[in-house]
Length: 220
Image 1 (cartoon, rainbow, N blue to C red):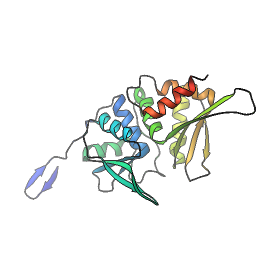
Image 2 (tube, rainbow, N blue to C red; image 1 turned 180 degrees about the vertical axis):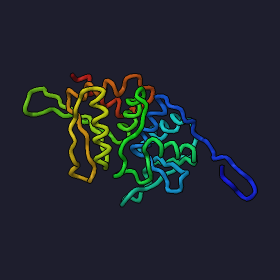
Image 3 (spheres, rainbow, N blue to C red; image 1 turned 90 degrees about the vertical axis):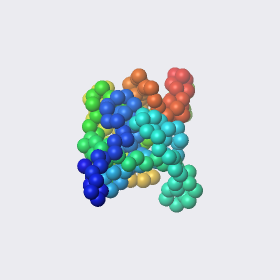
Image 4 (cartoon, helix red, strand yellow; image 1 turned 90 degrees about the horizontal axis):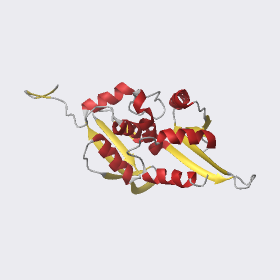
């Protein structure tokens, strides 16, 4: 209960907290590209991709003004941003493992078993990548990798363990040469297993990544 003068107000509940495939996907997006304000109320989500912003809003059942912002040395406002003011949802995010300034300190996220891959797909759309190439050492040898990135090695090891426990694929963790992030990588054979589960029953995903993966897999 929030006291304002002689009145009492219940904290606004804009987000319905109920686990579902879409809700888990949104939690994955927040884990990748969201941030919790230190004021204990606001959650922001930022992305260059407008589709990701609209997916985020749809999955949480909210309508918020979409703003624009710049980042780092780039003064052009190329990033889309939405902000949610919801103490109840903010406290829920704290309870599952998210914290302000989470990048290097996040450890794990408490996700119900049946929704883990929906959460993982959201995280992949935010902080994952898929790339392919033909290896010149072998004729017609198409290689591809699925990766997840995070500045917290504790979190990336947790993610590796959760995926291994469910799919028996191991991946490989390496530190990025470009920045301080850690990268969890899966090669061709393990990617086939991972991607099949990542998109199983998917009702929402980032279309450009999904299409890119589909085009590559059609070459096999």
